[in-house]
Length: 589
Image (cartoon, rainbow, N blue to C red; front, top):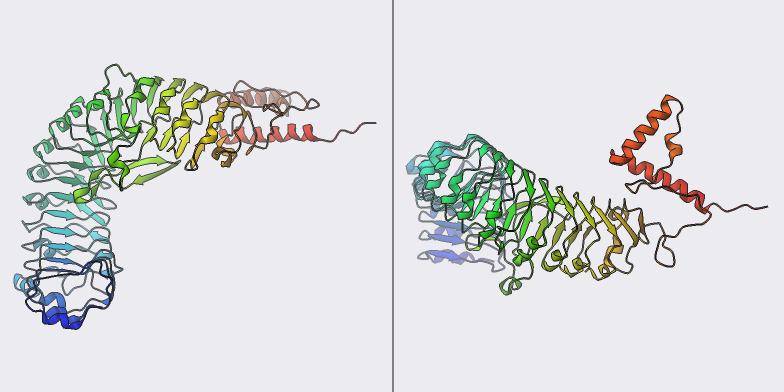
């Protein structure tokens, strides 16, 4: 516990007791330390109500950090506690605050206010944006509502208002803050209107994050004036028009996130000049054009997201460099076609093995010096999720829902650090390459809804226990499922639609030679071109005109295999009928 006698140290200017396993309450005598400029008690187990008298007496306080404790009551501070209710009127809820009162309660010198991560509600008090020395304001992750007040303090350097319920336009006075370097107005806010061109006047800006709002219009080209900008995140708004070519002149840009808008046209080739770019996410737009091979020369590019657009054409590698640092490639849900060139996968050298520096500790893509980590939306193990911190060892290739055909290149097996591989919903054919067994770090493999043939490679028995997602359904595979392996633990849905497969976990048994076991007394079975069993007695249930319609409808249904639920239902019904006939005891006289 903190002894009350600490209040006798009246000349103390800094009191910082971090992670000391302190418990109990904070003594009110700390209010006697009127010379304090820095006061922090983070990472302890202090509890109870924070004394009312402390802050008004600390008239020289510049820094306050009480995070990671168990305080309760009305005092709002501080990240990591459980405060509820509105910002209190004594200090934080006055609509107007005379300068004399600011001096009285000791906020004239305060430079840092962190109220993030609580359950504060109500509006942002206008006086808070007028504190003369305030440099850092964090009100993120609360329940604040209403419009953002006008900014009157010229000293602000960082504004964090994300994950609230704020609404209305962005106030123009925010763009008069000549010292601000970071603006975060994102997530669960409802800001409207256009992105003001005045933002281009803040040449000190390092980070702009306006994601998850309802901003509209085009992306202003005057952003080229922000030569120090490293992060521009405008995801999930209503921006339209083209991606401006001016980004090629922003040499400091590391993260460009335009996901979830209605941007159209091709990607500008000027992006190849962004030599510091690490993350490019333009997914979920209306972009078109060919694969942007010119991005392959970017020396720092680690994440490339193009999914859910209208990109098209074949992927050729003749004019392509090596993508030396690429770890995440998602081009799913586009119109790419042609063969998968083996030379493409030869270029993903960062996916082939981990660097020595990546084997030590936990590292994320982003600016670790400022805890500014980058995030992306990905399909991970079959589920769409937000990756809020991208591990540098996280690697994924998603080429699903395109029109690729031909065989799967053996070269994919060289990507030994690959965690997720999704080639589903294409027209890939031929056997599954046995080289995939070299992907010892694999956690998810989806090859479903293609035209793959042959047997599952027996080498798959060596796939590791880290494999959590495995899907080979809706192909034309045959033969036994390798036994005594991780893939045997997946249920039938991983194999459905492959009529030639047998063995556990399927109910169909294999013969002694490893092939399907056919009962010689069973009735002959017919198989459609799509591999679907079809009993024509089902189509002939009607007569006359009904017979013609029934046969025609059933034929079309089974050729296009839609609706899938009905096709699968009939498949299962027919299979049960055949199995019942096959195993019915023979009665002989």
